[in-house]
Length: 212
Image (cartoon, helix red, strand yellow):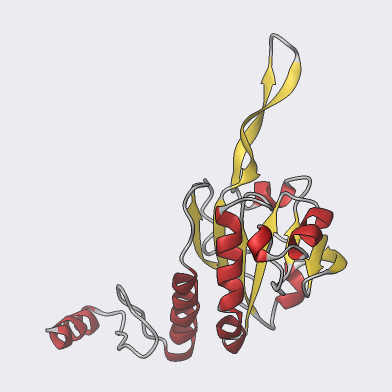
């Protein structure tokens, strides 16, 4: 599994569905460089079980991300037509109607591959002399926090059965923005409004002393 933290986020152009039902061609992360932070997350498949709980949870907190100048963008290996159908299906019927942030279509799996979250890989069967795919041909639950320069500053990858914590994604946005604005680092379990600390031995000692 590649560590992308500190590196430029892989760029792409792909079909997407935005605003709950509008098709867009050549959707790209590049349009946000210099303008917004991005939380870019992968999920395995439309019309599944854990995935809608995550996507609806992101939608519930969308205003909090927007208040932090942060775009939320989802991506799976489904087609734009599958995204559209899912976005037009009521939650009680297994859909995600009401979701407004973009869903990207990674139909050829190149985006998942470039972010190194594809849950399987291509191989070659020597006996049958043909390509095979080993593992699951879907993305793990990867999440990447990308700053306004297009650099990945945080990543987390969950296995397929394990849903993510949306509040933790917000906490990481807060921590990154606090560091950028103040130059102080954020210790364990830090939340917006908590004291941070200087990245020195004296700063750590002061922080620990104040916790007692």
